Length: 140
Image 1 (spheres, rainbow, N blue to C red):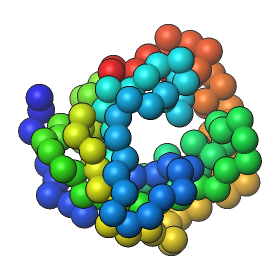
Image 2 (cartoon, rainbow, N blue to C red; image 1 turned 90 degrees about the horizontal axis):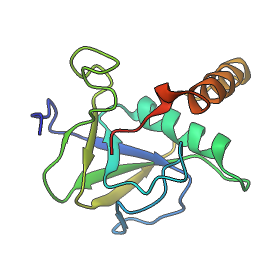
Image 3 (cartoon, helix red, strand yellow; image 1 turned 45 degrees about the vertical axis):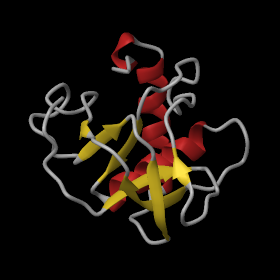
Image 4 (tube, rainbow, N blue to C red; image 1 turned 90 degrees about the vertical axis):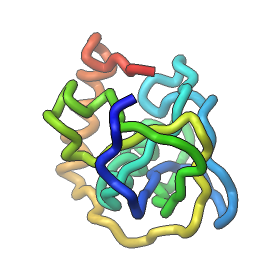
């Protein structure tokens, strides 16, 4: 387990409609590869990073969904996200983490840098390429 660089605050982007006090847990299908049940719950110290994850989750959803960002508190140990840390980026510039323990929702964030229509189209193209190649592998 790699030592995390942050102490928070932390954020999670999703399409789930949740309330303060509820928990986000592992054991759910990946937004990016729904055939994979995730062993961890992912979060970041960057509100815009969580916003991006929420917008991508909404884009990939098979139902109409709204992106949501929650302020979260880890309830157990967590580590740097190995899917990006030192694999795609040296260190952890995305300030991305994961935990097998639940995340407690402590608030909802309504302001983050939203994707422009052009950026959203770029992400659609990137995701299409990524999901159709082995580069989209998830370290679970």
